[in-house]
Image 1 (tube, rainbow, N blue to C red):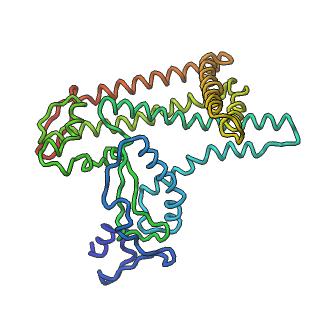
Image 2: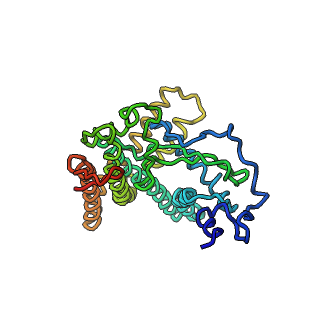
Image 3: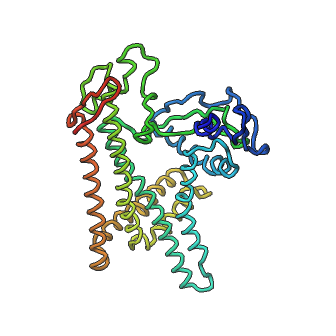
Length: 372
């Protein structure tokens, strides 16, 4: 294989075409789309950085990632950015997931025939229930992921949502006004892309200081290991935990989404719950009037308890009982399946990932293997 071809295979983003000379390569980048690289002094992060594992920091990171989809990833992809990454492709693919449900509900509402009162009322009911179903769909997915993440965090000390900032080299950032210098990822994104290096204390001087995080993880896994080798002992167990946790997140999401959609179709939401919630929030909490703060707080309590939590509980009970034999069987089946799947997930995540139930077989100085 020629040197030119090998160079293209090893670094395809930097090479536009082949030529007889190894030094004469081309980059197919629109000059109108390309701009000067951002200066190093203007960069937020100059190296990959582990971020604070706090709720506020995670909210900030999620907002930055969501905002980057329409403002950076889409323009970069549509403009043919040479340094467009697979991560950006995955982020862009989330856009239909975020907007698909709301747009579908909006289309139903837009088709309301105002000249026919009965038809308009029926169409509005369908649109509202579809919007509620979309909302409970996202809530169910969030609950499923939260259950798994909370389990592994409490029992194994691993936060699947631990964020870190990946610094993008400016020397390869040929993306013009849509240039980026940071990508936000998760430390335990997957078993293959875990950032083990960020878990070391690079300022430590002793093995205990350098492996401080790994020593804490070892205690969570029930392993007593020498500080010099604790990292290589813990890593296989962490990998197994990530694999199981990610799989169970998807499995539980299917159950909780089905539960949420089933509850959205119950009669407690058909009464004054949606209209009352909207009216209370719009006029009683954020309305432009002289309502005192104490009354606004009371209205907020009414909106949450009377128009959200109570209908939620009643819809769960009604979904269990059903309107007929078929709906009763379907409701009970989904509820029981969701509960059983949740208990199974927690049990397996706690039992199968424990260091006490595994034998660490040292194959050589560099790699370890987990055996049941």
